[in-house]
Length: 201
Image 1 (tube, rainbow, N blue to C red):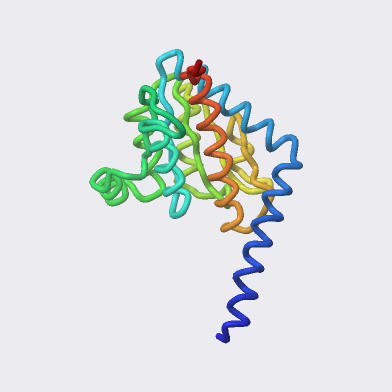
Image 2 (cartoon, rainbow, N blue to C red):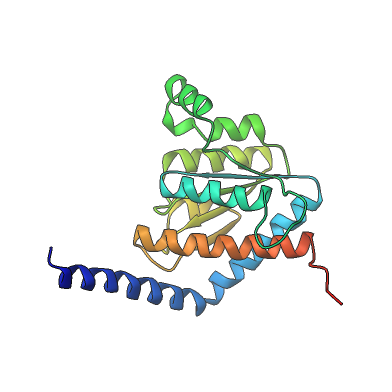
């Protein structure tokens, strides 16, 4: 590939990213879902519950990213927030995958680690991942609140979850970019609500 073509591809990617962010900014239901999710998370954390995160591939990385922001910090020092990614324990994942099938790797963890009043944030760009759908179904049976991160298409995940964050795109890379931007906004709102910044002076 000539450098001129590579530059065109790189610039095109940045323009697409800019456009989908602009679309998200103008999407009132999308912004409202960020606020609704942060409110639910804050309410349940204050009640002593926790947040579980699940996703596949890049969405697994997003699940771990959000859990990291909760347990460590986002913008400033404060107490840890109860967040747990269901994507990180290779012994558990491979045992469940081997013994029960990959579609059960999150649902079985939800059943073992979740409790009524907790929240499951289930991330799937397609909205159709079998193991994510199974996890949400298991959570609903247990009285666990369900939040779906997906794209703009109408999907099974969107139909099942209590609150749905729909990235305004059908392209996986763009959906993932919007998911992590929204995740940072949610983490910031939760952090500010639970641990208000002390005013200097």
